[in-house]
Amino acid sequence: MTTNLNQDWPEPIVRVQSLSESGCSAVPSRYIKPPSDRPNVFSVASPSMNIPIIDIYGFALDQDDSLRQTILNQISDACRNWGFFQIINHGIRGELLDDVRRAWYDFFKLSVEMKQAYANNPKTYEGYGSRLGVQKGAILDWSDYFFLHYLPSHLKDHSKWPAIPDFIREMTEEYGEEVVKVGGQLLKLLSLNLGLQEGYLQNAFGGEEVGACLRVNYYPKCPQPELTLGLSSHSDPGGLTFLLPDDKVAGLQVRKDEKWITVKPAAHAIIVNVGDQVQVLSNAIYKSVEHRVIVNSDKERVSLAFFYNPKSDIPIEPAKALITQDRPALYPPMTFDEYRLFIRTRGPQGKSQVDALKSPR
Image (tube, rainbow, N blue to C red):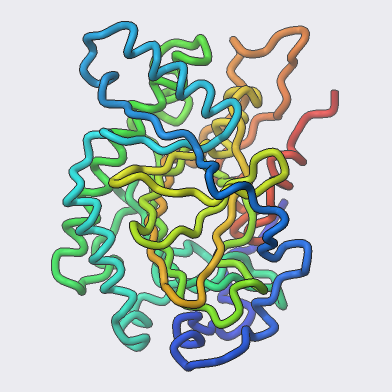
């Protein structure tokens, strides 16, 4: 696919927060989803259902073999059957999680004029944005966001990060450093569960040259939440995603057995999901899973999605050790740069991209 992203947005950008705060009583037509894509009570799973919650504290202790194996088994089951799980006792201070989330909430409460100084474009997406994809006339999501690069270091530019509120750059830097540590640890666990060498997935990602970026999502109040979505259904194109959810308002929904499960975050948990690149590397033993975000008429939400990705120019393909006569390679090699052009051009589109990649059998 050849696509020119050296362009601006195809239409004037409208900040969803401004629409919400204008007091509009109806969702503009640009945000109304087709009936099949709208939130529907009949497609939502029982409120008692939740994604797995896994305490990973014991693994870091490196002492109790039975406890380590239990954690490995729990993560293996989550990656194979859910594509999503929450981790607790992950080593990131609860105060940091609360403070960085609050700082970004305060950023989005600044005036539109102040935030506009960081307005983004489709070439890099870096900065303050309100849409994904560059298709003219596309149906949009009810959300604004801020996107920034964290790794590799030469792409990280603190001057492009918000300067207000105080210490937001320092807190975001510290948060990124901590999540990268957790990302490296989890890749080891995923490698071991696949029967690979502990460092296999990290090396496939580029070793010390991994990519990482952060998208902070702001979901304003919506007058007709039953007609739209904060983020359309999609699987994440990258490696692993670490989500710091809103601690007061639920919104993330994960697809499981044709039902949508509304995730109920545990206190100070990080929500982890398998991205398309890990599905490819594992030859579809691990599954990336569709998810979406619903919005709320009474409450706004903020969440931080940290993407831990392969180096952009390394071909990603199924691990040779996972290819057998009975299970040949399901995907051809493709760099992450080539792969993510799809979502940056077309926006979120379910699992259509990774499914379309499968080699003919």
